[in-house]
Image (tube, rainbow, N blue to C red):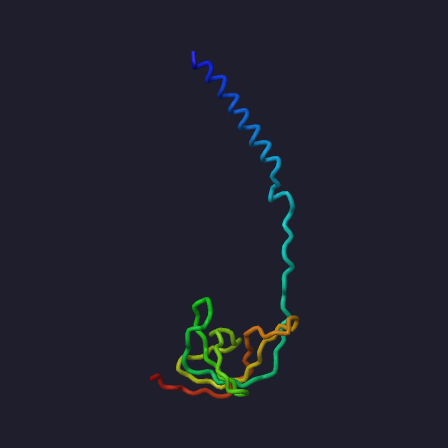
Length: 134
């Protein structure tokens, strides 16, 4: 006797559930309803700054950065400051470990933003000498 009563309840419950889902989905906006608009691509205009003379130290150090990488220690002849240059950020320069270099380089500048990029372009290797490791 209770079996026919359950059988009539089940389709009504299913119908109510389907109606609820349909009504709720009609209120939602689809993320695919409008086409995405890409950000404009920024292409920097790179110019070379004034030539500088740097001494590249013979050893490499871990860079002070979020990513693990090796840096060269560079000393500026202009003001004597020592700073890090990521290992491959001097174009056309492949230093050998244990060799100290004096090089002429030009910094790369993003002309649009009027800021240094951190990259350099090698002009000349002025001198190099092997340095013994301690």
